Image (cartoon, rainbow, N blue to C red; front, side, top):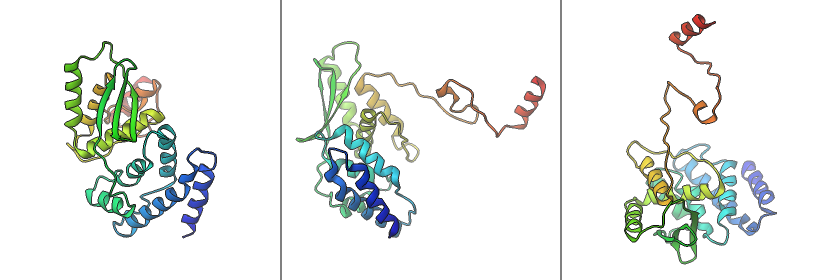
Length: 231
């Protein structure tokens, strides 16, 4: 496949100056195996692209030496799909079935950090923003919230944590009532941050985030008449 050959060269070039340049072969093999599997067996065309390579590199940069690379492979290639069947097939295809994934959390009060512990050798450390020192009762409450998450929600929370470290935005996709919003609220609570939700609909647009006007070429008849009256 000429395209896969190109991808191999691109991955090599992107990694040649990174500390984890030795990831080159495995990253390419995992990309190739996942792409072939989802496109041939699950009929998902264009399921992977160069953005997925860039995501791996960004997440690996912020977690190198603190997080097992296999966890990032699982995040980028398997848990990106909401279908459990596809997740399991990819995990098996990539040889990640022995990956232990039972995360827990602990707070380091003097430093002010939250540690998400995935294994003895893998953890994610995030800065917290609590105004007061956490009491024992508050820690228990937050721990219960974390353990209330499903396996998929914990996977999502870990991915969100990596996005925070890499300063990257992300989209969370899933069925209605699948726990997307709840997972984000739990992460905010764990970090001592206040979440500010914005409901986007036909009456507003992304200008509320940018603080400036955005041209909308699709206006209603009512809006058209209002503009005519104004001008």
